[in-house]
Image (cartoon, rainbow, N blue to C red; front, side, top):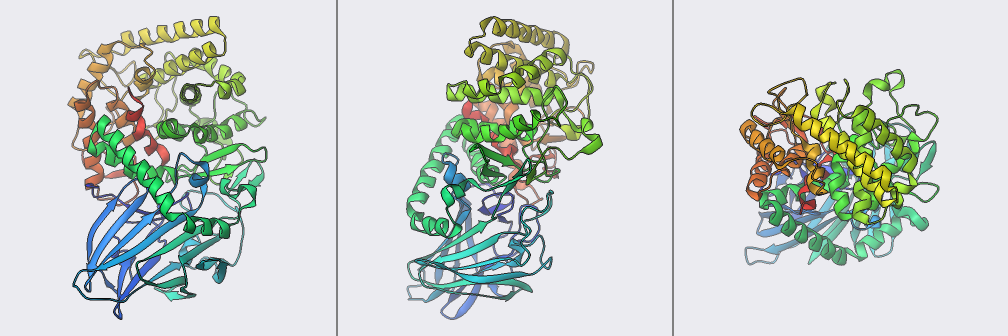
Length: 619
């Protein structure tokens, strides 16, 4: 990867089991929140100890290169006459529900002599208490050896196991157990490193050594009052069995991951250039690791997102919407799993509104919203109705099967009627970009309503309701014509709000007219919007709208898809690539930053980066 990654992924499994770094052996490893999540790696070469991972008092090995693809981060070091290669892999395959869930990540170490001499090389990995406590010192951790055939293994956990006892955003897990294993015979134990209680595994590297990191959270999500387990536990599988299985299939699984990564790079390069392809490879692990795949008591798959570094909401609709393209491309069952909690919540007595809810809880407690008396203030009525209907329509189109829509027809129909009533010229309310505040007459929100109505018209048609479909499609066309007439600026671009002449905004919601080839909007709309975006472009992106200089990564790429030429698309994609390549805030990909400086405004590690995959959906 040519990009200097803003943060380097090492272990990327779920919102809790997450380890990153911005300097592989000069700084402590961290959780995506930037809280320290210390894992330290040493190699002993001919009796002298060097540090290859994390930070302590040992000499740091010289780093030659850091590279990454979709699933793996590979670091090469040269020192003491050897070339050491460390390959970190989290094989969270989106195409396979089991691998998308199994909480096991790899580190493979190998070395070769570069001075022509023979060397004895031993690796020692330390996993600290910070992986099992919210913060070091909050409670006490303990450890014990674990018996797994063919492996040496030790686990560490909090002494007080309060499973699923709290929710929040900038918090880490303090229940369950973290496992450190290595293939074959090795020393394992516990001790103190850098003032932290830790477990370790130590093994001589002959040809190579395979270390495994795993986390058993016991139970993963509270779902409307019931504690439910991760998908990988189906059939009663234990974490020890999962670790042993992962060790046995490393080579085969790595081959699958490599094949996926190579195809993704080729497909993305063909559609949007090599820099676009790098954006997708960097985004993939982050998107997967901001979800948790679980199964409810009725056997339904639920794929619960965490709205990271925002407010910790769970199953947030306006986070699901931008993340959807990756899952529409690779596995619609996971996208259905994002929507099921919203349908469940909207059908409870607690939800008293005729529009779709914003979210279904605060991670990992999916028991309904936590806003209390301020609930209505934080809803996005037109936004979420449009999002839910568009996503269900897109799922059914991708599947060639409208069963999912049929199962939820009554509530989708109610939300469609809400769009008809309020979507032509939306009143004062929030849209997905809620950080920008409430806005009346929002043109982009009107586009959302129009595309939602269009999607539901297609659903009606496929469910044999042709008369209703034609009527709704005619209304959508009427609203689209009204948009063209009332939102146009003198230069031919289109406004932020109907009553704000001369303004602009990224019209990302219109991308569905291109993807679905519905032809609601004339070519001049797309052409003139792209020309305006080029004029408004700053060094690292196009501002979200006229009000501020900040932008959103997902919407920038969606808006770029309105362009007819690959050259225009690559222009916008390169702005985003440059932002991450130069960003001084070294955190997992932020989606909200200043387009003039590339400085982060807020948000990090969010699932919305799945939206970057949308170009692969275009013809």
